[in-house]
Image 1 (cartoon, rainbow, N blue to C red):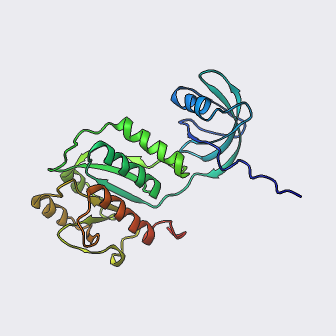
Image 2: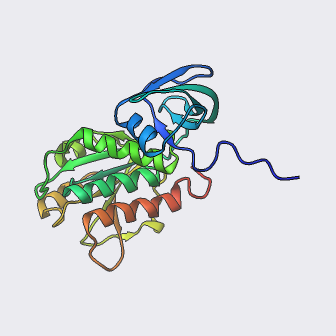
Image 3: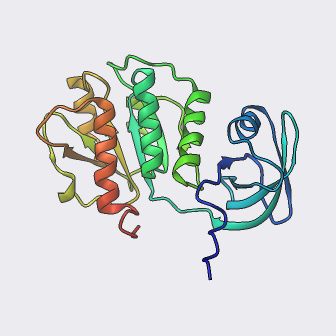
Length: 249
């Protein structure tokens, strides 16, 4: 007797919708998302699609009606409740566009809870387009299976960030001047990682960071890393030690 095929199939498209989802509800998809589903994925009536709303989790829906520019979906059942990601913030200085996109995409995939842009003295890109970063976050969540979007903070100057820093959140400072391996630091959630811009922090900024009692200096190996590499390397190390990669946290 042949095995029953898995449902929904692994190829089922996944889409974020900014509306509450529930059994039996209907959802209308239009704009760029509808164009993708209709003209790229070529979905027809009855085709499955997975939706998540950043509120309740993930839901299985099917196409009830397919027009030229929009689709109506019927929500059938919940497939997953909303996930609880490890309480890790990534605080980073914005870099040039493609590299910034990479930080946002990979940090989202790795499971950070909050993305916090930080303006430093050597930050080249001081203005970031929030809509672009939000689109990158959503696309990464759709691809990697996340059901909860990471929070996105407004850009803040380094001094402001440090002055308002919560005392109970360890701040892991990727210090080019030296530190200890992250594996030797007891910094479970709530925690945060701070990486600098291209060219690193200025001496004055470094002194300011080290004055904060929540700071723990960490080293990221013997080589000088690009800002975006440092951000993702530190995030990966923390997730492996304190995050949900091993089923903990």
